[in-house]
Amino acid sequence: MYYQNYIKVAAVTPKLEVGNPTYNVDEMLKVLGTLTSSIAVFPELGITAYTCNDLFFQHGLLEETEQQIARLIKENPYEGIMVFGAPLEIDGILYNSAFIIQKDKLLGIVPKFYLPNTQEFYEKRWFTSGYDIVKKVKMIRFLDQVVPFGSIIFKTDDGRISFGVEICEDMWAPISPGNLLALSGAKMILNLSASNEYLSKRAIRRRTIIEHSRRNAGAYVYSSAGVNESTSDTVFSGHNVIAQNGELLVETENFSQDTEVIYGDIDLSHIAYARKLNSSFRDTLNKFEFDTVNVEFHLDASDEYTFEKPHDQTPFVPKKDELEAFEKIAALQENALIKRMKHMQADAIIIGVSGGLDSTLALLIATRVADKLIMDRKHVYGVTMPAFGTSEQTLKQARALIKHLGVTMKEIDIRDHVNDHFDLIGHDKITTDATYENTQARARTMILMNLANMKNGLVLGTGDMSELALGWCTYNGDQMSMYGINAGIPKTLVRFMIERYAHEKFGDKIEDVVHDVLDTPISPELVLNQLTEEVIGKYEVNDFILHRYLRHGDTEGRIAWLIEKTFDLTKEESGEYVRHFFDRFYSQQFKRQATPDSPKILDVSLSPRGDLRMPSDVKKSKQ
Image (tube, rainbow, N blue to C red; front, side, top):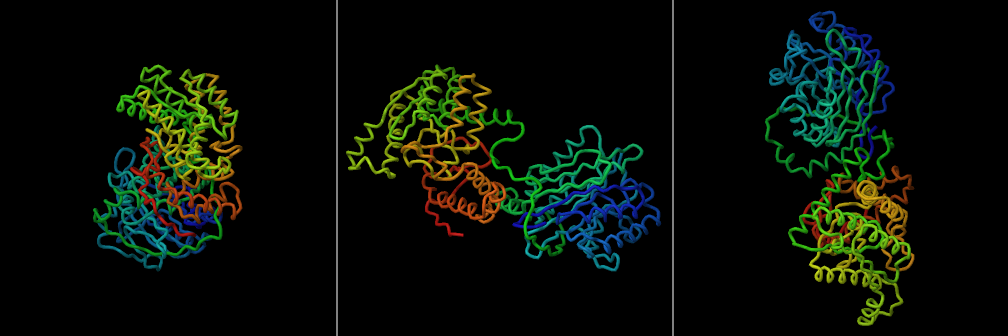
């Protein structure tokens, strides 16, 4: 299955009998007929079994192996690329090898380079490393086919799909063949393994695979021998792992007695984007001499794509180790503000408190920072500034939050002040246009800045990353502050943080207020009954778009397809979300260019001094 630059891969551990290639190929054929992937990886020496030991010296086993590979190729029901392991004899010498097949064609054969010969492994007794032979042998004849042999990059004719193959111990080497294949263009490394099990090895193996996928800026598909290989002093578990770009996608449980298959959805666009971004990866290109052969193949695209698991609708929000994630984010924000307070020698923190999500988080952080600085909470000023669109509900929430936190409350009704300004510029005070709304936002910012001067304080900005992405802020209004504490936090993560702050760091009264804030529809309250998500759409969808754009470099068309599947929207609804998001995203860069300093919290940000160096006057073509 291959569509929209996603490719489905499978790591397969079939049932097996040691030294019985006929039985083993039977089991492989059974599972091949059921696979829905475009690539399938089987374990090391899976045709014979890895634990044949001195049986590898027997001509009978080697002859049966060749016969059964021929049958596997002839009867192969699988349309994709299959990779399996078997011993290969060249001039009377055995090489532990990987065979790469598409239907009835042998695309290539790759020998194992590093042979373990310590502790329970003594592979050099039977096999020879491929390092020397690949220098002089580039093609071999096998089953009446002339087959590329050695270190191979397999690429589709359009170059979108590429992979290399390494075998078990190769992965554990200081510089693995897979690392070099990745630097030579392989987006995926497929590993055929027979890794035995003992206490703690599963965790070590998982870390190693994930780290290779991170260092290679690519995908890693690992298929290992199962329990039926277990013999004498070694036990195998069939621990299969699929990882991409430093993230575990899926792994098997241990010790299945039956054939086991896991599928992974590999995002080839993400790999290509990560390699463009990663300067260290680019700098390493062409640094190592590594003799590779390019083998071209063709893979038809599917009509559609079915993901193994649905995409996370809120990818910025932690889903595991939630408390640990909360503590880390809280530490980042709090310590960033502590540093800024010390640098400015500020005596106070000034916050405009609206009773909404962002100002709630900012006030909770400011209160914690005051405590850590051993500063009286009264030096934190929660300023409410009701105006024409302020609701009783949000004002009540703001007052309650300020009261229960024990910070100083200052309430300034700005309606008369704004009306005076309208008189100065000749506004009719009736037309609810951009001037009507922005005058209120800028008046609030001016008041906060002047209060900060009076109190030798710092104006703490409350706007979040989602608002910055969409330009949902008033230039030189709520866009401006002396430190933007939330600018590295998307709206969906703001919700997570204030709920956790209330539960973990504050008492029941704060939790009650926070739950009211969470239940209140999001609004800038610059006019009556103004609802943000009726104008810009759901923040969950917009944050998902932001995630796909910043982290994956997706095209607008691909993002529309993904949100259609992820949020169960129509094609038209998805397209409209994407068009609206990017119209705002590109046109509002000028606001982001002038944003105050803010701590980076996630792996991505919109800081013009950090992650996003984009011209203000970009003209994006319509798609």
